[in-house]
Length: 275
Length: 298
Image 1: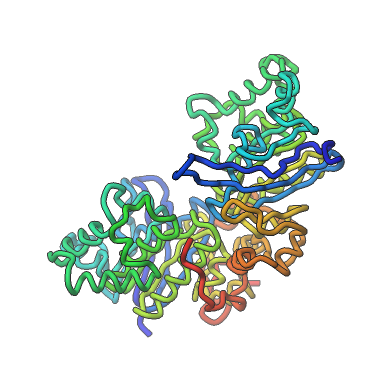
Image 2: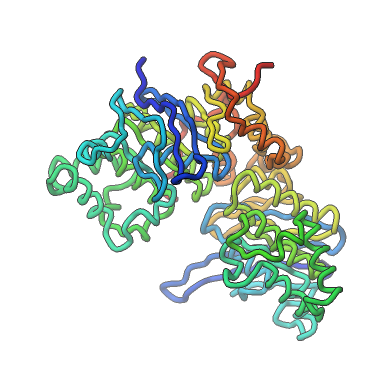
């Protein structure tokens, strides 16, 4: 059975509101991370397609209205206390806006200290310092420079790398990265994405990458899912999807990605305005 | 052809601190779409705000000037600027949600513009002009009755474009107009800008960081680094024969949507490169037809 998957989302749906105001954000979405070998799965789609709702369900922050999310074969609500705690540690998040995820009143070391306490390690102990340094070095940040700073003294790319380092403290099995680079400077985006790929290749961590950027998705994903209006409209090998999109929306998405070549400009075919 | 916009030896700085921008020399022709790219803090926003006479508090033009149709914009004559602003130079902002008034309907906000610049109410002929310009950005006249939050990000951005185009200005400065939009809306907004350019002959100064977008829409591209224009030339020449090392680095960093290879290398320049590229003593020189770059002779 598939119940041995590390994390499985099975026909999950989420509807906000009820009755006349019911608004289905996610309908029947399924995906799974097998427990053997790390994978990078991307969900791509425009704003409002349900991709963030799905990420929140995968993280256990939102309960699906239909279907379920299973961690090692057990639905999240059925996990006992110890297992749920383990799930919380092993499935980590890197969220969209680093300027909102860090508390401006604390130094950037604060979230790292909280993570260490969760793990039962005193942040100021030799062990705690070693773990923090190790995690920061994995994302090529200099611990001496970073730990004394406040969020406003750092760039978005640096903060996102601290977020990744914080997640790394838990030796996670899966990182859910919800638009991790959309708020940061273009020249730093590749850098942060490279670290995500490193996590998969070097540390064997699964990644759920949520994005609207099809170009980077093509470069780094093992499996690509295209979401539109709450549904997965197409899924499969990234190159296959980009070369030969089957769904109308996917085709629109693929042809709308700007090609960096002045000799291959967008055609004059009309773009639906109903968005 | 004479230039619509001429920037000559422009230097911008904050007080006595070293200048943050310039000296910049740049020309724009009528009906031309010029893209400005570069890293954050590279000076592209400062340059565009100097053109709009909207420099951040404390920033001043230390040297040089900007001329529109041969008439210098600085020193600022407040009365003259009232005639230029929006009628000759208009602006499309980055975050349309923050610019539109959240508690007034779109129609009322168009009304303010017409009342302010022409002293008349939004009716009759002007109403027809507003409807025409909304149609041109592919919006229904019904949006006039909407509040900004009832529209999607792409629609709000197109409302802002319609506002900028209403008086048929000669120049529109668009500061990252699509960075908050998904690719489908981005394409629609940019194609709308191009259509309006063709229809009204408006020149567009498009500020952005996405070179792929510039490849799609720009006639000429200027690349800024550390407050200097390091390369300026026709889009095709920039993509086929980039001359400045920073330009080459930027181009390599654009991920392909065609072929799966690997992530491009990060564009983060080393400290040595940074020092070298911001050397102000290296002059701009011609490296191709209409194509100049700030680099040493090979």
